[in-house]
Length: 298
Image 1: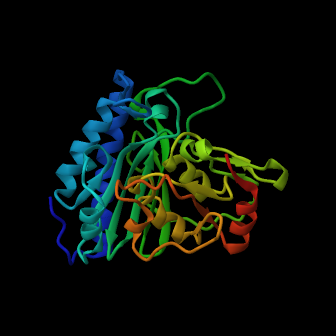
Image 2: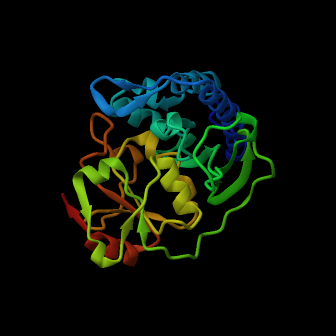
Image 3: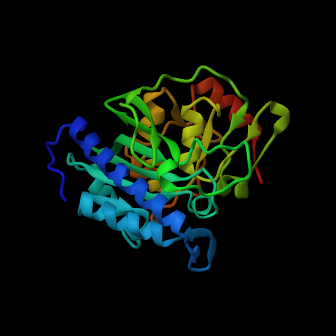
């Protein structure tokens, strides 16, 4: 389905919310029924399940040709992605299931997320983490899909929003999410970052991650992290960026604290990878400078 170019932002948000409230229950049902996890080629770090592919198909049904998503990006290339994102029309960037290993392994750090981009930047973001509120008082287990409790995070027109979920859909209307005031001394530390960098604990920063970009974003948005890092792919960053920007967080390049390019796609190389650069998502420049001093090349 093509979204008309003049569709108002609030209407686009509504369509994105409908999608995640379909996709999250689908993923929960497939997970409860049992899944085989494979890997994408020889890269053992890139996991894949039938649920990833099922949500990918749903994305294409809901957003049609105006879509860039992980499972079908293939040889899309920088030039084509740049042209799609630069339009005044809405282009959607999505990760069918972010955190596939936690998803298949029965852990809570996974979810469905999608961004709506316009004029070269992500403008609207929706993230659903359907089992985020997992009861951790006992042994880990995969419960009935309909009892799963989680959180939905979204942003539109500069305002961050959230609501609790059960079984995938929200149980309450979206409400405003305020910028967290807590300080924890912890930074999101994803696998790609950990392969290339180390963290000097003596400077008062400590790593914490639950498996994926979506979980790090949720930890940051709800005040459990002070900052996080990104050096992955467009679909890892585009959906979380509107939420974090609405909460006042900004991108800073490591180690020089340079500002991001004006076009989102220019964060990535010809293969749409950001692995050669490290970006910090921090509250302000002073915090970014402090974190930058604690990061070392491995």
